[in-house]
Amino acid sequence: NVKPFRVSLLTILATGGCAGQQSVLDPAGRDAEVLATLFWWMLGGAVVLWILMNGILFYVSRAKEREFSRRTAELFIIGGGIVFPTVVLAVLLSYALSEMPRQRDLGSGLTVRVVGESWWWRVEYLPDGWDTPIVSANELRLPTGSRSEIKLAANGVIHSLWIPALGGKTDMIPGRETRMSLEPETPGDYRGQCTEFCGESHALMAFGAVVMEPEAFADWLDKQAQEAAPPTGTESIRGREVFAAEGCGGCHTVRGTPADGLVGPDLTHLADRRTLAAGVLPMTEAAMIDWLRDPEAIKPGVHMPAYGHLDDADLSALATYLLGLT
Ligand code: CUA
Image 1 (tube, rainbow, N blue to C red):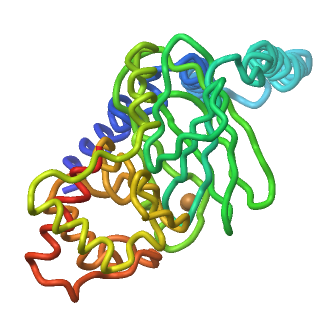
Image 2: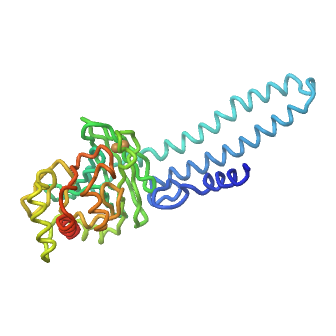
Image 3: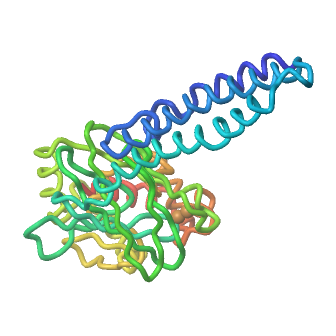
């Protein structure tokens, strides 16, 4: 029976991607609004054209050969084949061109640098007046009310950054700095995704995009600039010992501790992020233990080594320490 399949397919096509954290059609920023407007106008135009073409096809299929004069035929060809597409394309082009200066305007707000890594995101906030960047990973936070510039780079292979609810995508190319700018309008939690095939875990290279009111954002950024809170409680202190003994600090930085590795994500305020492993797992103890035990099972090709040789007590202590990093 084909019917239920057709109905469900239509429902998916009609509603899928129209709402939620990662949708072009549910814009939360100025740039995404332009894209959504263009989409709806083009869809509307396509529907009108489809109906028109099918109407003509139907009419012609029933008409007799000599019903059309040469003049009518010429009018159809010139009007439908030249004038109509020229007018439609000119209108679309002029709308897109009128929006272009704004898209190219890098704004006077915050500057953030995002580097695409193998399969995670290095994020560096560069607010005015700070000499050193505030380093984070796998989550991009932006304030409303201003246009933020995002400098993009890539380490090793090409990636592409896209937050559909906030704007268009821009490629990240090794050895080059590309730029984009975003003007978020509605505070909330959104989702971004790598949109350029970059290797085996390309599909698992996502991130949270959090839009905040300017005051809340400033408070959050001040907190991110601070060193990690020291562990409290025996479990957490033991976890820090495991972290040091296993050499985690060779790859990860935890500011305020001897851990200063630059290979993997900065963990200074890890627990402030909403997801683990670049948008793949929730930030919970169970997920953290799964990740530490066998990252490869969750994200094929990942550079993070497995810590399955640790016993349950050590893994649990390590997870407690990491989830206390705020
Ligand atoms: Cu990074 Cu696809």
